[in-house]
Length: 541
Image 1 (cartoon, rainbow, N blue to C red):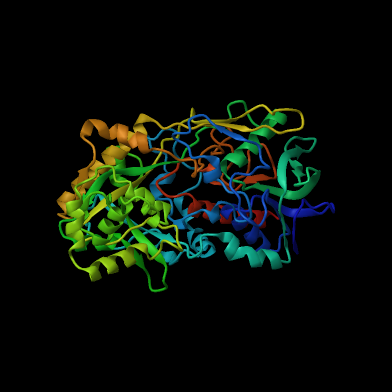
Image 2: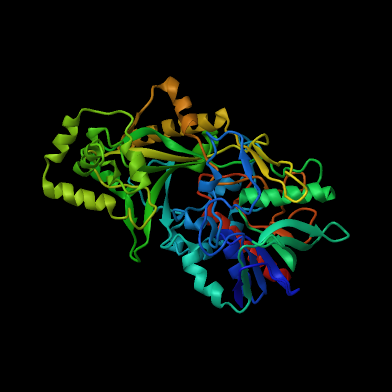
């Protein structure tokens, strides 16, 4: 059909209306379109990307030290946050779906196989590599039964606007409306169905848009805000004890240790690799489900990263060259990548003599190492990583967060009668989140030593590690939990089909429906869940 730059005004009734054009929204919309359902996408931004939407209600973050600024964490425009996404695709694990007695409020109303069956299609949609390797890292030199490995694949093109722009433009069953901001949802007389959406164009005029079914896919916080507004305006929609807006989660990520491989070559399998089709992946180390149960810890992934550049013990002439150049006034800009700039900020400077010794290896070795390190900087948002002859690497962790009902978002009062309410974010980590990270490191260190593969060197004494984990804990990119899936309206906002409890025709496609975060970055499983939702919508059409 067409791409419009304002809400439709011809009175059309679509089979499905999707609010948002990010990864989840596009996955639902394009799958519905492939099933010959007339589909409308409402996008508040335009074809070009901007930061936080000026056309949307403001979001106030109470504790900015643990939550990213919204102009960084969100994107307005066609493709949504995929334009800023690194492209990493990692599945949720079977244990993530279980009701674990050591993880309060855990357990999904669907099983792992019910979502995993959509992993291959999600990998195809995101163009993220071999579909049969997403859930298993294969053989590993770390043979300890208490650890497993998992491959994290990277999409070839992270921006879905680039991947699917032409398909949307030429679709026969799809209409994309840009600069179209949903300001409210209108119920019918029963209060159990959405009859229309109130949509504001960029000129400030409002129109009513109608569809048989509606899907909120405008990000975790924005989707939650629309539901909170609906609940306030039509309070009969949700029970008094609804978890809507509560259990706001993300992940804990950071580095508190260096992993040392006495045989440097044994680290090679944990660096970036390319498969036979050219897809880039990295092997991640995890603690086995059985260890998580017996040790009562949360799910955590470990990945290798560059060692601190200031520490010349890494033995890399390329890293030493970058570190020394960065110390020269006016040359710090050599690092065109923000990721490299952060790595250059070594917190434990060591004498320049160690770096000079590294550079003395040979000019050819320095040049080759530097080329390998910077190969992907201009074109990809990959964390920087390359082989070093010392076998020393930063150990990056990406850890699950415990569901906490006091970590929440709520509506703020509108400034006046003509505006709609904003959102207030009270995002919280708990002590148990940090303690699990520390215990997971201890267990991994034991496994590395048992297999004589390596060991950890901590960057802080034992009594400072807890504070170090919490000091690095910050999210806001992974907006999980505020519309959680549950087996009843008391336990969840949506049911197993992502339908909002109390509403016959309103659904969500967002990581905000996850009851727990797992250790996976949420984009890949969110797309899998969106494709599952599209299949459900087609089955009931």
